[in-house]
Length: 461
Ligand code: UD1
Ligand code: MG
Image 1 (spheres, helix red, strand yellow):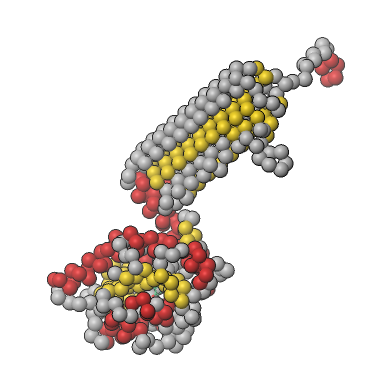
Image 2 (cartoon, helix red, strand yellow):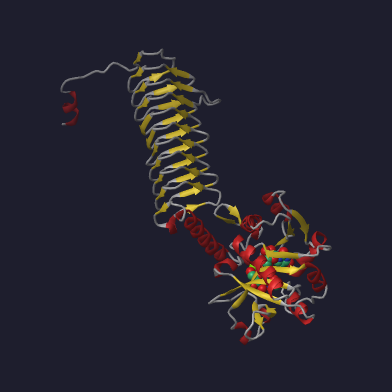
């Protein structure tokens, strides 16, 4: 089945410079969700109708869809479908039309609508003109209302709120903005739609009454979960949709064996992958292409962006890890920062207020407190004391530091790169290291300690 997604509108109610469909839900543009859902439902041939700020939309969406351009973004939803007519003019099958501002529709619902059409055809011997996704909403404000033939699910027409009579406004079944029409019938109907008297727009919903008058049967298909039909017309509806999507994603993982504490506070983006027995605490954010392996724990307020977290690793409270790999059983944080393609080996510990940038730490490395490790390679079993810093920048360029296996870098020492600290060598606390230290050596760079008896008390009293 071909699909047409409408994304040309002005989105006036959003009060935004950015096209409405590019506003983000969990780090992805709103329109990404419906396109992804269509693909998941097995629809490959997709047209996207663009108009308002078309170039921005095209750039964000990429080339997985065919683009059609609506000249007049105030033309209305029927005008938008007409803009795509070259995509389906000779198509003799059902075509799916969906609003680009309906991010919550599920692939299951789309598949069920397709099955429904086939079942009606097979068992009732009725060829439907179309099926429309509807939902029953306690508060239907803003949506087109579904007017049906009493006691059936045959739709007679859809009336937009602006045109509805007070009785029609009381109808709680709404148009979900997703339609499956028999393309040749739709083609005929679209050319017959008159502009709305109130707005001058051509409403796609008007195709329904035209087709019914011609003797076609249009049925409703009610969404099992009414939130699926949510249309995002305002920023508040965007916030609402984001919340619903967030909980859907968390529920998906919970059902696959992930524990999420305080789910309403946790943020998991759609491309994240989680294994069984992962445990996530309140306020954590898992972004981009993050993957977390079995038994790993993500502590409260931790942020992970494009991170691989190995089995049983722990990212403790309020740590921020980006574009990096955390090995099996490693412990990050609390309050650690790991970034820019860093690799933390298995069993290593990057602790409180430690920053690791573009560095690779081997296995069982300890850097537990207050340290900066930048552009460095740290060998297995090395120990980096509290306050140790790699001075990687000379004001012009970045330089490398190499700390070999089992080296001991004492507290508050400064390693001025480029520099190499040899295997099993020992840097005494507080030293400034500007030369390579051979394997097994002790390096001390300190002014002589002077102790003046009684002088302290003299100053203080
Ligand atoms: C529309 C439906 C309404 C339904 C609701 C569900 C019509 C006339 N009304 O109302 O019955 O309950 O969706 O969410 O269709 N668009 C274009 N070109 C245009 C106008 C709009 O491409 O000229 C696109 C928009 O970018 C948007 C979609 O069509 O993605 C729907 O338009 P919108 O203005 O949001 O329609 P609603 O008022 O929400
Ligand atoms: Mg809308």
